Amino acid sequence: MSQSMLNELMQRGTDLLGSDTAIMCGAMSWVSERNLVSAISNAGGFGVIACGAMTPELLDTEITETKKLAHKPFGVNLITMHPDLMQLIEICGNHNISHVVLAGGLPPKGSLEAIKEIGAKVICFAPAMALAKKFLRSGVDAIVIEGMEAGGHIGPVSTSVLAQEILPALAKEIPIFVAGGIGTGEMIAAYLEMGASGVQLGTRFVCAHESIAHPDFKKAFMRGNARDAITSVQVDPRLPVIPVRALKNKGTEEFTRKQIEVAKLLDAGDIEMGEAQLQIEHFWAGALRKAVIDGDVENGSVMAGQSVGMVKAEESVVDIIASLTSEAEIALSR
Ligand SMILES: Cc1cc2nc3c(=O)[nH]c(=O)nc-3n(C[C@H](O)[C@H](O)[C@H](O)COP(=O)(O)O)c2cc1C
Image (cartoon, rainbow, N blue to C red; front, side, top):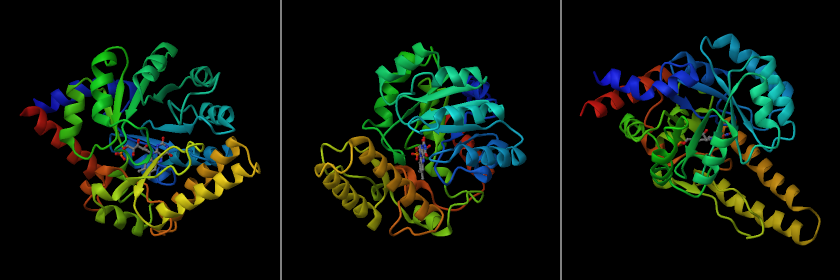
């Protein structure tokens, strides 16, 4: 009975995604590539390729390779400030991608229409009520509300507050996926009961067998506790860097040094603000690669959410999804 209740609560989410469960694995740069994405979708969840800073050619290849492995639908996450965004959307269209997730701020003019035109559903991040309402008016198909407990780039508000503000007001109007700090099925059940159509998890899937993250990156996750996953500090009020949540290490300090270096270049008039922000974003992409791919978890960026303390072992994607759903079912039956 609780299983049918879980299915019922996830129905709108699974209908939208075309998956068996409304558990999305949020795109994670360097981690969410063909292997993890196909494994998530094949296991009944919904995998999303992280395009990040990939060139259109690289995205083309990644989609081609993912399609060879996946026999269920998967999505593509595009960053709104990517200079080739429109070309990336076109690549998604060439591959008949069913879902595009837009991350990183307001979608530039014409991008939502372009995604609709290729026949894909569009899912946007709404880190505040005003933005959620705006997306609803723009006709996006679903929104993700992601709280500051999440790993990677984060907003200022916690998941529980976003959920309380946005779910009761908008859940009837549009499917909403809750993200940030979800480590167990109990939490999934709670957000579904509040009206969410599904959830998005990142941290919990990093240590999947199918994830290509370096063994040392996975070990750092299995050792880490919630309090180790801290947010980056902004050193200069003029330099509006988006905070990033990652495990504390030398790389965290290196970021502070990088900001001072960029602020000095700004002071000297050597670079403009746009270039300064781009340099910061490139720093993150490089630092994350260093940790995820090379396994340098001391100097690289080990982006992780506060739910990292609930990651205890390397498991298969099938097992992770099975424990999340059975925990949710038990919670609902109580
Ligand atoms: C290592 C890592 C990299 C991430 N990279 C991206 C990214 O490239 N694009 C994006 O939209 N979200 C990114 N995220 C956020 C995830 O997609 C997801 O929303 C988040 O991890 C959910 O919160 P949780 O970590 O508490 O489960 C990243 C998260 C992690 C942990």
